[in-house]
Length: 224
Image (cartoon, rainbow, N blue to C red):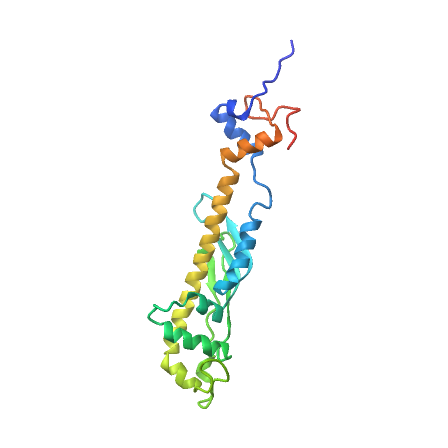
């Protein structure tokens, strides 16, 4: 006597069979993360972050996270992050003008130093250039709101030794924060794609039916 395979809707399955079905057929599409990463690359420059690559691993194990590599555009970074109520606001305005006038490198590289992990703790800054200390005593600003001012005097007035060290720490901290925000969005997106609610919609769209072990019944796997 021929045994008929049960054909059950997902909601009719046992909890075990549901988990089996989701694990077998519920993988998100290969490009599920593209929109979030592309949006991060688009939003980054306004904050001074020019992102070449985003790496991540996840999502529920120790060491999971996201990081990015590229560079920080210092004038844009200072413009975005330097708020009028900050204690060093005026000093950073002067520093931004010095950078824009070419007395310091405008870019700081952001790299990753680990092979096995991708979390923000693996990110490193290439360091802020301090060649302003070697300019001639008579050098003056060529343009901008401080045109004609003596470069050495400006540098001394804002204590560039202190400011460069602070800026380097500030850059890396904000770059890591941005990576952590990318990871948060990726995790939420992944959780949504692998949720039972999403899988139910997927079953309805594809007309999937299952046996009592969570396998798609032959003839009901149109979307596989």
